[in-house]
Image (cartoon, rainbow, N blue to C red; front, side, top):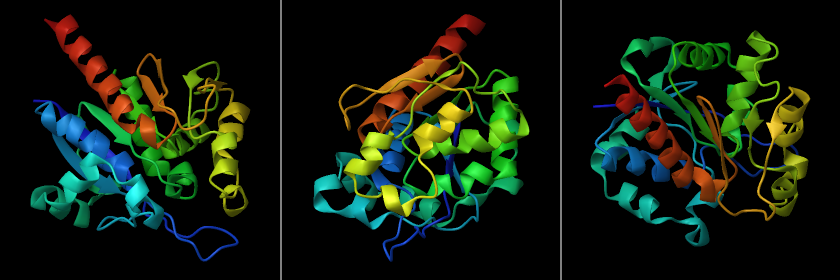
Length: 233
């Protein structure tokens, strides 16, 4: 059985506003159930441990996904979400891949978290895939800070500058993630139309653009893991 590590943000405050952020719920639940339904086990961890903040907008009716509803009736998943592990306490050898959901939180905490950055490097160095969606790819900034040039020429996508503007949150973030990833040398490829599913795969690095890309990003990770398994036999 494959073991997936999911790393969540612990940050909820935004700039120049009383609005809160955190994990975008569907970007956690959509991938979570893709993995669970594949028979994988999932361990949840976060920067601070315990229950991560949830972006209130992601619980509004128009943003609710089928997996959100399933999560609300899933006591096992809810208990895991209420009590995420601290990054420093993980035995990384037990995991086959790591997945970073979004929500705006990661652009504050995971982008500068050295422990998370080192986890990404350990996974890539040992041939294990790293996947991230929406603002989750902000975690790659920490890895690229530790290892300059990490993203140079690599195909990557994240929530785009245009999508940031269209969600009226461009003034509430310290920087735009697309711009920062390009500054780090990433070969940024986004969909022509905002908010449609889009996934980029570059070797062991899998990134998705927006909330609609969360499930597809998880599926791409599963395909990568299954292909690795086949190649081992």
